[in-house]
Image (cartoon, rainbow, N blue to C red; front, side):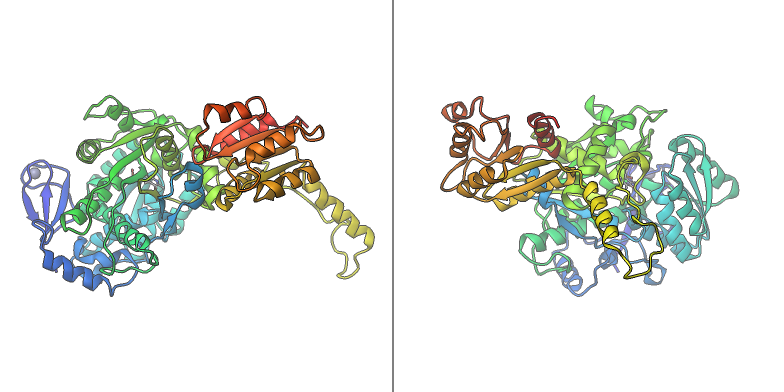
Length: 572
Ligand SMILES: *Cc1c(COP(=O)(O)O)cnc(C)c1O
Ligand SMILES: [Zn+2]
């Protein structure tokens, strides 16, 4: 066992780890951190033998147990948390022109968010401390995760949630047998009431970010990421933990949507420990995002202030992130940003909901709105050139959307149909009339009228454009992967719109534009050029007046292309 000490952030006094309470017996400080024997100073031999042991351990966050604050293995409460996939954002990367964007898929935790890590370690710590009844305040996901783990640990949980938490989430909390207390107020008020309740009943109160277990839980995201990136960059399978077969690698950036900020605080502690142990060569820059309707930290950061002003009336649909009073956590984040670089940005909800759709449609990942804030933040930082194309980015895909809330998808997402001749016709009795009716009905469901031809020799680029059009739903798509076939296709199908690459072997995009413009049957078909090429003034002139829009590959969003298409297409 590695010796663990607890260090007070205020007075730096150290004490052995005996209780889950963060309160310092010397100065009353409320923020403490765990310190491990091998790390300071780094004991290279101990680290080497640890990674050798890791090579033989399974895929869960408990593989790092020597560096977690649980003394005895029998206290571990587990539902298989941790070692979530690190997925390359293939299509998003293609769209943004950034090919090293990785998604740490925390949706795959046992209750669907990265709070499962926190719950696993915090509830194990409660068990170790003999807690049998506990109180927690939550914007939803903590209550769900803690409820599941407390059920397993035999701990009764009182979950204080704000009334804006979606009913489906509250029902899940109740399902696990927790007491659900709905507070008609802000999250910060719910925290206050929970604390008073715990004090009056003398119950254990979980203090979230201040608790040792929370930060230690979040740091396992850093450990896993560095191990998985090591495999990926070595061309190996990242789903298999390797321990010491590859060097561990830290990304250039860690991105997360934040509420109280415990994710980044813990994750940065993890990356710092790895660096101190000599396992990685850098500590990433940090980018945190808040919903602009409740962004006390982003606002303070913008002003360069080390103290955040409270937001007493959060105005956001994204309840998960509605911490209006960040307290000491902001100071800690501010210092981390000063030391390692990075930003805290505010993201308008409209951008978030757009990003939510984009990530689902482009890379098959459905997230809850809180998580989409981070993706919208990624788009913003890429746009503004804050993140460079060669940099490795890991984004915390913090939680799943289930169910998809109504304000995200609206009501108009189904195409309805009923059996044509009513129900109950015996099998095999279908008349030809019925089949025709069915065909007509199916035909009517397909309301595509516009034909778009994509002429593009790079298969990745073609797939990206096709995907953007398909997800929009209303286009017939024809494709050709070289200029000559492309021109033939255009002559054959007479599309309503051509999306064209410029650089292709044989007949290039310029040649196609010229051929179309000199052909009276084709010269009115609008053209959008999507190119990787920096155009010279002469090349610009060759296209001038002949095309509707010019988009630079790898630096447009799906919405840019769709709005250019909308403008280019003749109205139907
Ligand atoms: C809690 C939560 C966040 C915010 O995390 P913090 O690190 O606590 O600020 C983001 N996304 C989801 C899905 C969450 O549950
Ligand atoms: Zn102290």
